[in-house]
Length: 304
Image 1: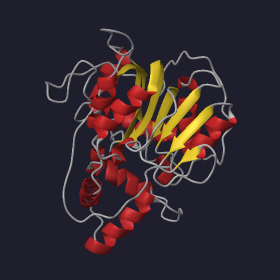
Image 2: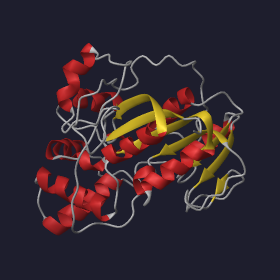
Image 3: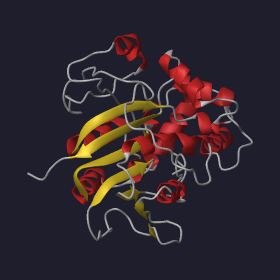
Image 4: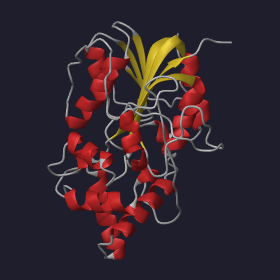
């Protein structure tokens, strides 16, 4: 569940696109009017398919005015990223002991956190850890023993080869109205300005930093400090790993779920020195950098 799981490095190829959401049908907030120019290109709105004309939807930035009943998940092996993901998940899940599927659980930190809160968790991943709540399997291979009340996918959808089929399967595994909670990386939004800001604040001494690792590889190959060169390198790396674009993932989620929340998600701060989520969000809102992630919450539709 940590951002993001690194596969192999890159050398050639390319990628780019994205965004929009709602405060209510047909309502455009003043906050959106003030900030919509940040998102270049815009995320597709709920009403717009990726193949159609891109329109600006309404948008709520960073968990503005959530009304859900507050519950607290006791974090297992927490850090800033885990806390922020758990905050979203705790507000989106139905009450325990609901049955929850986590798709792409990684090392299992979020799955253990949800389980410790009293939920009946099944967490799947091709490299899942040992334990009674874990299954070492892909979503394509997974065979469920019944439906789930909710599903969570934290930084995992962009890895899945057959994205549309996988999200359709997740929808089919949920009870009608079941929540689907997504936090994702939009690697194709890593433009030169965002790269320059990230390089300025990068925590080069952080262990297991995916961004520092890519910076070191880029410098070793190119020997330069040009931020646009680093941006291009990260985009090639993402493309060589077949990462899905943010807009493509959002469109597929909207195709199968009724959207209740969509937010931009500050993504780089865990890799940076002395930068908080709030500070990264301020840079995004000021239009100085791109939002490298998004969150989505939707509910499964009833079978026709």
